[in-house]
Image (cartoon, rainbow, N blue to C red; front, side, top):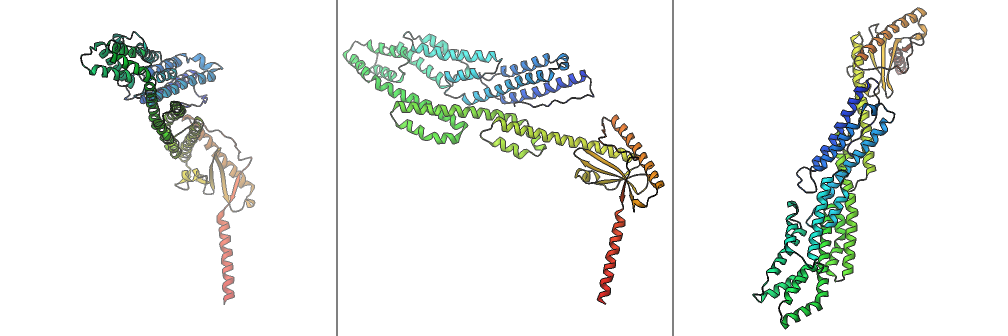
Length: 514
């Protein structure tokens, strides 16, 4: 699930053109709404990797779907399957767009590197070519800069050219600052004249600072040192060769520790509890000199971070989808369940889908109840317009509670309508209250049937009036008066007899007490 949910139903009261227009309007509104949520995620975000092309891509897919959704499609046998498959594709692109946005926001840190850029490229949703080209160019900038510094013929002007091609919003990351610093060192080396004794010390400092893998700049430093044809310098260079392995190990450890710190910081952002569990490993890495152990710690942290990031992005996308249903959850009394899901650190698709399914079912039930209540109120009003009257003012409330309610008829106080509201509809009985059905003559019974037929006529008239207002009443079971007439024994008679019995008992008791 992502973005929106819909359910097919068939309206036989509309022609094909009306259904087509309504369907198109519905799908456009729903897709527009989903795109607006993506737009909200990009609000106040300025990044080379998060631009308007993401929205334009979604709008292109929407336009393509709406243009291809034709009357021919609507009238075809495969209409439902075709629409479902196309909507599924759009929802998938919306979901991937959300995942990409969250990924970039999570990973766009000071330690942005080539591997992360390649992750961005692989996560891009289908159709975002321009952003893909931008990312590819930035990857090439990273690679070209490193390649130039590794080249024996490292060229400062070429390096400056690459640095000037960097997007403004990426000129504050560590990689750019480092490359800029190395470019300055290269400039210093080229301008070095050995005017002061500190020059050699400065070059040696550079030699220790630059990673050995950047062979081009390292070679230029060593060549500059060897320009001094003195025994002292040659001995110094020889000593550097002896200690080069030790220095490179120290530099390697420092570089790995920096990566560990970067991964640990990102882990703290998305899962503080897990980061706390891994803190001891980070401390161990800083204290040990075992390079292999430090590398293993880095790999462990990276593996945990990648798995955690996957769950984090999945959860954030699902929470973003859930936000659409917050108002509906409040309306249906499911806000507690909604808030519980929103507070969970990890969400899975199944539990969110189940929640939305239950939410929509409850909303449908409420809407059905509201429609039935509105129809019922109109029905009662039409009945009253024909001379019938309610016995109680709270008739609607009693009906909604499943109680039997009565409506007085214009045919005499003994003739009543008895109503009961149940799940399968409204049950109506035309009844007459009598002292004893057995005492009724055939004449009275025929008269009752004739009166009941008047009610049947009124009922048919009400049905006709309501149909003109768009309310259709379907008779599931209709029993005509000739088939069966309902008599109800008056409770008053029973009550009077009961009261007489009580009086008799009371009199006997009094007589015994005299």
